[in-house]
Image 1 (spheres, rainbow, N blue to C red):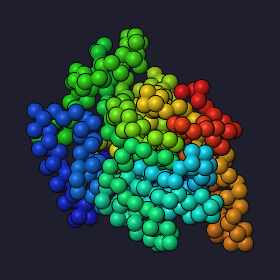
Image 2 (cartoon, helix red, strand yellow; image 1 turned 120 degrees about the vertical axis):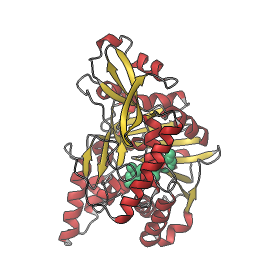
Image 3 (cartoon, rainbow, N blue to C red; image 1 turned 90 degrees about the horizontal axis):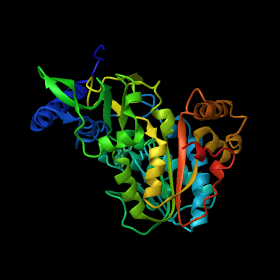
Image 4 (cartoon, protein in one colour; image 1 turned 180 degrees about the vertical axis):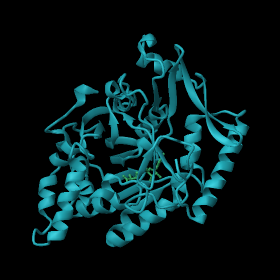
Length: 389
Ligand SMILES: C[S@@+](CC[C@H](N)C(=O)[O-])C[C@H]1O[C@@H](n2cnc3c(N)ncnc32)[C@H](O)[C@@H]1O
């Protein structure tokens, strides 16, 4: 792939990241497990993709998430959150991985219109640079609500009653990559050859991965030679930690992904791992580490079963399109003044982007988990796909 024009700051960042990764590989006897590589490339302090302060979201960044595509997304979500707060008697919302802060701002504005403002809106965000951006966005869009927002460094202590939401958080978790090779499983590590990052496929090393593959393919002989995919071994520990925090209420997770059956379908021979830089998608994880996003789709069956194991009940699973429509997308579009033609066109365009099957409507899913409260939620009333998990 042709190296794009990089600014001096980007080139310096890339050089520093390559040194950091090379050192980590050498310190790991020349072979770094892929999930650790991905973790450093995305989250190394000061240098990792999400922690280095470079612009990521929106047209001038690398990709567009639903809250960036249209405010309608956050407004519909606010309707679901308001219902959840009422049902569980909660006074707090916790957003994990808040990106630019736009979703928080739009949700708070809508919750205010609904007379459903939480006393506290907590944000757990790993990136100090993004925290700063979130504060600025909130200060500009909803300055009068800023005092309700609190940034956290870790999950709150047990005892939270309310709603935890996360959009496109789980796809940014480091994954292990594996493949079928000459009748055996292998997992990917990252090595160095002439100072260049390269794939190093090795027999399974990571504790727990063999058991997970055995559970996915009890008869591994049916897996085609060369079949390659990935698995997120961090989901269960993450879910346990979230479960400890949430005493009563809801967890709403939105992301792109599949049920397990679809995820590990024999025809999906290369898995779902993908990278983004300036709105280009590519598969090479070693191209621009620190400057490129790396992501894998979410296995919603694994996510739901991690939730059940952690003591939640399933409240619903559906497509983003159905979730938004059930939460009043049509009505909310109508709020924009039709005489303001430009704004109206923007709303229509945004709604299409969020709901069309060829855009975000079907590929993105919503999973809701509940503890100690009513599991009937509006967002899943017209099309609940729980039985497909
Ligand atoms: C793909 S972005 C999505 C941002 C935003 N939710 C949106 O939809 O625009 C992932 C976000 O999650 C944050 N993040 C990743 N892992 C995290 C973790 N373990 N805890 C908190 N935030 C995390 C990243 O810094 C980033 O803000």
